[in-house]
Picture 1 (tube, rainbow, N blue to C red):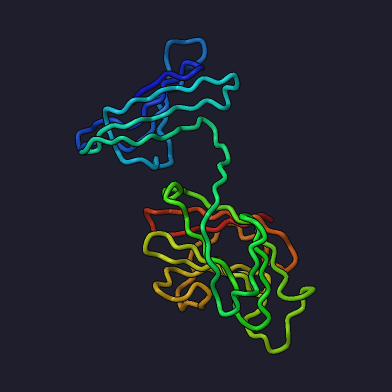
Picture 2: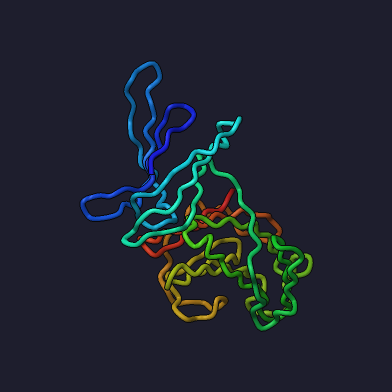
Length: 239
């Protein structure tokens, strides 16, 4: 579907190419003071399947920053009745995710709200496993705020091997990748197969973005970029 936007731009969603239905988003932006313009393709792969013959409707708003387009139906080799929304500018969407306790000391992990998890395992492992909603399956990033202390008042219990490490496991399709904060630094692994989320994996280290620090007692904002073409998750940590 193609639809005009408030500033004279044109938005094209999908279409039909030589190889079949197209899964692309293009924006034609007019050049100010001329009758010309240029096409720009979105770098993000849309969550809907490649399709043609769909309908696109612009939802008007007094604030141009909040402009939206609704994509309805289409054909991706079969007729579709789904509805999708395109936002001109990113906007946060909050969804409650289903989760379950995990680890050898799962009773030591308390879910205080849908967004706040507080854990303390004195000698084992405590954690939480979240199930990503099917509405978010094509997400390209995951953001997490993490604060780990390594124990009461930042002091590790004597003989408590492994306590003090914070581990985040992200499963992307068939690949589970670990990110471990321990000893003031981040480390990561390649795919760990069926190993438990808290297990160490003898895999070669792969890419980390600017990794900031992982020192206990410091709040860190973590951004995980999901690269489905390479089956890889890249972590960025603020400084």
